[in-house]
Amino acid sequence: MIQNWDFEKPIIELEKKIEGLKKFSEDKSVDLSSEVNDLVRKLKKLKKEIYSKLSPWQKIQISRHPKRPTTLDYIAMIMEDFIPLAGDRLFGDDKALLAGFATLDGKKIAIIGHQKGKDTKENIKRNFGCAHPEGYRKAMRIMHLAERFNIPIVCFVDTPGAYPGVGAEERGQAQAIAENIRDMFSIKTPILVTIIGEGGSGGALGIGVGDKVLIMEYAYYSVISPEGCAAILWKDASKREEAAKVLKLTAPDLLEMGIVDEIIYESEGGAHRGVEFSAQNLKSALSKNLDELSRFSSEELLSQRYERYRRIGVYNE
Image 1 (cartoon, rainbow, N blue to C red):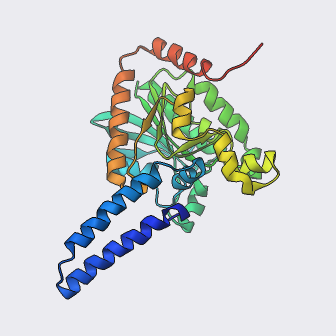
Image 2 (image 1 turned 120 degrees about the horizontal axis):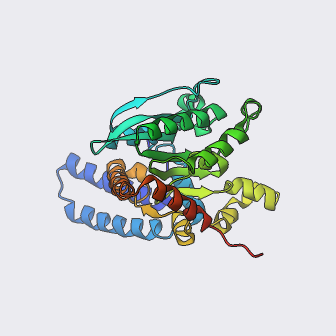
């Protein structure tokens, strides 16, 4: 069963009315097609009205939907021959961050991505998509392997943030993320990053440096979560909606500021409401951008990657 948010209640009520009329029509052999069609038109108009006016906080709710497609879902739908690789060769394997090789449109790629669970048991196994330092070190190990064989790298970002626990800090969480950010600027093969859900803080940046950064329509990308921001600025986490607004973390805001390069449009109401449509849009965007990046030499890629991030932000001396 798909979870629904408060702003979706009018849509759900109308959908139930339509299903009820259809069932009554079948059970009683009564032609109610005219009434059903009227309600369907009303539903289409209502969806357009609601989903075109979502607040930043409502978009964040969609990005966190428990049924939203994950890295493994997209791998299964748009890639072939996926070979997962495990371990950082220092401590162990992190289930919150996947890494391996696959083919996309017949071309070999390295795929790295955060992985959330679909239920409580799997979320515990995946640590709710919050990676440990061994996850980031595993990611960099695979990136260097891809570089050795001149294979482009695709990163899927979907995390509320890196895991902040004592064990992660003891094993060098901050250093692992910092080294990844540093080293991704020197990887000589194309790197294409896509925020597919949550893009939280350093946990996202640990696999977030790329030649192009794409974002799904209802994903977000931010230095901190709205709840965290509200707790720091106002000492009140309930001000999360206000924080979400001022953080400018939605796809259109990020595109306007030059933080991301392209928005990948989802099904109406979010990728979980039309997984195949959203997956195919993602596949098209990945293929197009990988083709464009393949035209540049290693030296051009490194230079343009550096300049891309130098252009972000404004400062006064």
